[in-house]
Length: 165
Picture (spheres, rainbow, N blue to C red):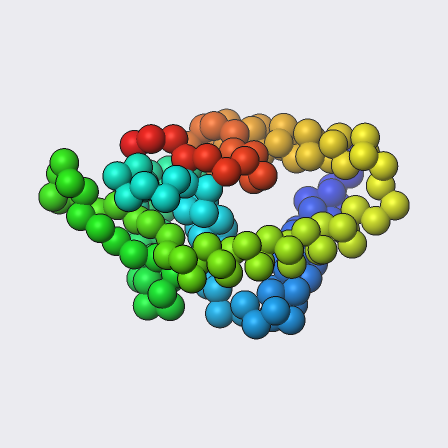
């Protein structure tokens, strides 16, 4: 195995992040502090009773609960999310995306699509599918040795669904 492959992967991720942030800024969306968290909420149904809890979000995103809590505070101040007390358990809050959040996620999806189009320029559809398949396998391998909070593959980012809680 090439010892530089990890460095190359890091450079790729950093370049993708920078290009994504530039694309968001071009659309006036640079204030979105946690696009991945917002995207997860965007996939959920509009029904507040089915909205995830903070703990469920942390599990789904393979993040520590305090990290999710800090991100949610910022997103709430920005008007992107709201917390509602769970009707069945008053000790739990359910997190929902606001209409402003939905609108800005939809606009940011176009920015991400354009970045991906540039990144995959010259790749055939078969090559794109292969790259995605290899990335999922790499994630699963890393999750098996503690690379995430849970040992399960990430959801397909293009699916818009939220498991009922």
